[in-house]
Length: 100
Image (cartoon, rainbow, N blue to C red):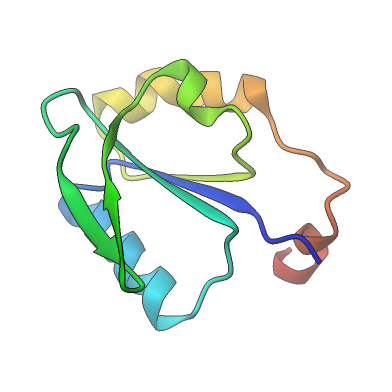
């Protein structure tokens, strides 16, 4: 079964850190993880499940290929949430049934 591609927008903030903690504590399955933030926080390194990720600047195209996006709030989330929704997700993925 394919695991979802996951993105966290606002990964460097308090809510993003909580999302990361929950993903680790609950062993949330994902194929790929993309950590996103504003341009100011881009380049920050964060460790999730023992792997180091470089936070990317959030742009509309950041959500291409993403199945699940978690938004930590803030103005950037308000701006980019509609873009993420336009890119959508595949409602027919088998992993969706396991988390729905």
